Every structure is written in structure tokens, then in C-alpha cells.
Length: 356
Image 1 (spheres, rainbow, N blue to C red):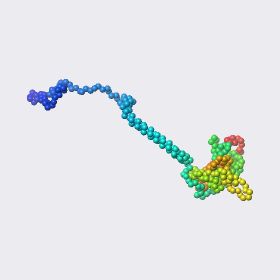
Image 2 (cartoon, rainbow, N blue to C red; image 1 turned 90 degrees about the horizontal axis):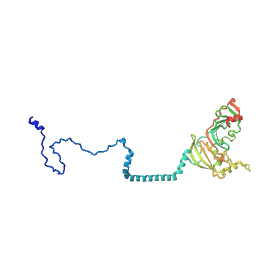
Image 3 (cartoon, rainbow, N blue to C red; image 1 turned 180 degrees about the vertical axis):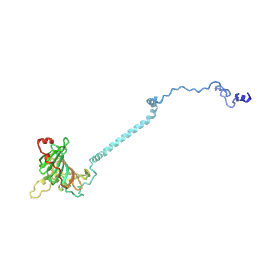
Image 4 (cartoon, rainbow, N blue to C red; image 1 turned 30 degrees about the horizontal axis):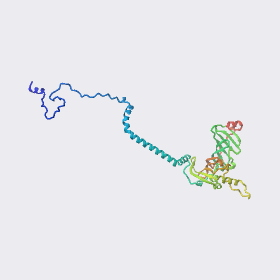
């Protein structure tokens, strides 16, 4: 081989270092010029237990293991938060109690007023008619009337006050309703689900026409004539409605003793031949006995723009009936009367069939 090849294979020789201090206690290190024939060794590490997989970790074990360490840190902060929470709860309860005492009755009255839907407040005066009055010949009205035997009787009447023709419908919950047609001195009655009519004398049924229209459909002046208004006080007034008709609602209290005295004076003949004072109440309404301990008679009435009383609720001492006028008309009215072949005489068997 030539000198160049020998130079490449001969290991290089470096002089020993002379510029660094040598620690006499350090283990002997091989000199860089010497090559060790031993295999290289990786550094050793302490044996550790394998870490469990995420699916093998018990979260409750971790929480219980961490709890002692976190308890000391969170004990003070949780105690402060718990105390603050109790203070807030006590303050809220105290505020609610104060609000209930101060504003509870007023809130109850507002809720009740909105439930009744009586409308906004209005001036405490008897309203004047603002629309032209329509002559009332025909009207339909609903009557709720106390009865000593049946409790309360409910029926709907359509009447022509000039001809005396009426139709009366009595709804029933335990049986089909009854329909009664009256003309002149005859009446016809049937079940609402039956085509057979039964005839019988009319008498004053269903309403006594000798009292006239003012017994059932009245204006404000007819229901509360001047002689009676002097004995009344308006307790409440609102703008309300009957069905969809705008009306003026009044709650009126009357002096029972004054009404009884005026009623007695109107029924007592005068000794000098002069006319007695007018009755304080309209036809069909009289002051009933049992006024001892009664401070006032309160009635509720709804008046439309033409001055017609669309609804009236009377106290028990004035009969206790409720009349609701659903329609009025100046036109005559005539229903479809039964044909002779559908009419039979009223018998005991017919009464049983009618459920009377």
C-alpha cells in the first residue's frame, strides 16, 4: 500500500489536555484517543408500575384520593359561600313576607278584579243615554230565578210584547230540554228531541203580560225611577261589556228601610182622594220581608248606550233574580207553530214522557 492509504487507516493521535484541572476523586475516564471495545450502554432508570389506561381509572377513587388534599384548600371558601347563601335566602324570605303584608290584599283585589273582567273604572254617576232609543217590541232574554222547590230555575224567553207570542226554552242536564210555545190562551210543550207537541191552557205562563215589557226589559229610568234613586248610592262603576256589547256597569246600594216605607206608602190609599206616590220599584219587583240586620240592598246593573238595562242582578230581598237581555228589536216576531197532526192532549203519560 502507498503512504496515502496508510495515513487513512492509522488512528489519529491527539496530545493529552493540559489546560483543565483534574479532579483526583473522579473515576478514571478513557482518554479520547483510546477506543473502548465494549458495547455502548443505555442509562438505567428506576422500575415504575405501568400506568392504568383511562378506561380503568375509577373516578370515585381519584376523587377520594384528591379530597383530603382539596378539602383543606376549599374548606374556608365553601364555608364562606354557605354563609353568604343563607344570608341571601333569609333576605329574600324576609322581603317576600314584607311584600305580602304590605301589598298582598291589594294584589288579591287586582287578581279578583281581572278575573271578573269588569273593565276600567268609570265615574260614579248614572249614565245618560248617548244613542237613540229603539222601541222594544221583541226581545230575547235569559232568566235565572230562585225557586223554593227547584232551587234555581233557568230559562230563555223570546217574546213579542204586543202580540203576546212567546217561546220559552228550559235547558236540563239530566234530560233533553223543554220547549214551550204560547199564543193567546194556548200553550204547546215538547221535549227538544221529540217531534210530538202537547197542548194545554196557557194561563199566565211563562210570563205575566199584564205587567208589560218593563217587567223584563227595562231602561235605567224604569228600573231605578227617581223615587228610588234618592234612596241609592253608587258604590262602583266600570266600563264593561255583556257578550260583545259595550255597557256601563254600576254597583248600587239601596236603603232597605226607605224602600219598604216607600213601597208601603205607594200601596196605601190616600184619605184626601189624591194619587199615592209612585212605587219605588218597577213592576214585578217588591221588597221581601227579612230586612232585620240588613245594612243595604246591593244590586248590579249593566246599561247600554241607549239606556237599556242589558243585565241586572237583584239581591235576595228584591227577588234575587238575574235577567240578561241578549237582543231587542222593534219588529214583530212569530215562530213556527206545530201543525195539528203533531199535537196531542196533555195526559199523565205525556207528563211522564216529558219528565215533569
